[in-house]
Image (cartoon, rainbow, N blue to C red; front, top):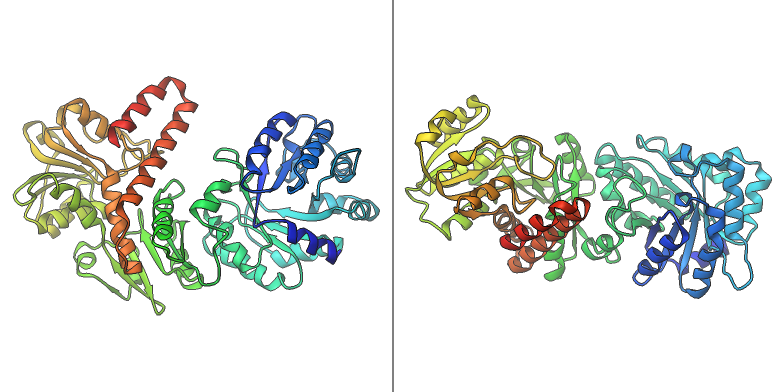
Length: 535
């Protein structure tokens, strides 16, 4: 067994691409594309209508692509898969996948779920082990991360070539629990460990350096076989998983939600461009204690702080710059010798695009919102001499901010008789996934410039409304890139590659718009034209 395990480990890469499809032809088309870049794949036979009938074609593909290493998986529905057959039927399919045939190469590995292994007779599992292919015994917990040692103790008696344990991260620190477990076990067993869920991205990227034999990825966006799974190209190109090592510095964007944030692709692109050995992750959490604990344990060297944590982070900072202190909100954290230092780059992100277009001093500006981003806008604008008015759905919050910053509150009914140089949206209204109704109507957009700090999508409903009225617009992409560039400089001491950061963000937003358009063909022409205008 150890010799087979060593041989398999010498064949495989760090990333295994999960291949799905309802027919063998569909699977083979996806596999042919995937193996050009990543010759280590998992065929999810449980996705097929007739798994056994497809094996011949899949084995022929392996015979024609001898550099490919393939796992056969036929996970039963009760264990999170799609196969509706019995345990005996699952075993039969895996045995056939492992069996050689004329001019066909068998699968090099088979994946048997722990619950199936326990339901089978020991002789049946021994027969699978004796087939000459590598055996993976896996366990998936779709609810939580718990009792990892207990699960390992259940798997170990089956003497698999690879132990695969996949819990679900409910907190960021669940990733730490899993990775410390991997570190302990990896010297005595070939282990694969991943946390599922939006909070589990940490383990998907950093698990390898903790000792995980490999990790799994989706063939493409939208083809994920587990919650939180990342597309192979994203894992390799954006997160540079092949290059992550013990010296790689870890950064991230912390908030809730951040699973759609483009900060990771922007920052990782900047790190790659400037040859910085660092990786930047999405850190989704609703709990500040969870984030602070993670920062200390990984450790995280720096974090972009977004909604709803920009004010909640303040008590955890050893020191903060004058802007953060004055504003009462921090969007950038740097960890130095174990201590957390706070900065605010939102102000620069907001002022820079405006100052390219108008003289801010004396300008009349309406700010929508009173949260962390709004505070940065109001204090930054007031500091430059702008006359600022606040409109917020909770008037008490706006009144408090106005008093602190020397701004004024305005009532909704007064807008009809008012005009401004700038209307600035500092709320999440219009963000992808946000269903809140628009704050202003077309008749209330009485301004020279409309600035929406929401960057995804580029064309928010507010931006579209302003364009229809012929107003000058500033999209959130400008603010997003500017604040990110300042963060990069704080963390690395290097000038930020702003043009490259802008290019990759716009490109990603175009891709998202095209995917959305493909899902809703009737809207395709409109969405594509809007994005082209914005770029």
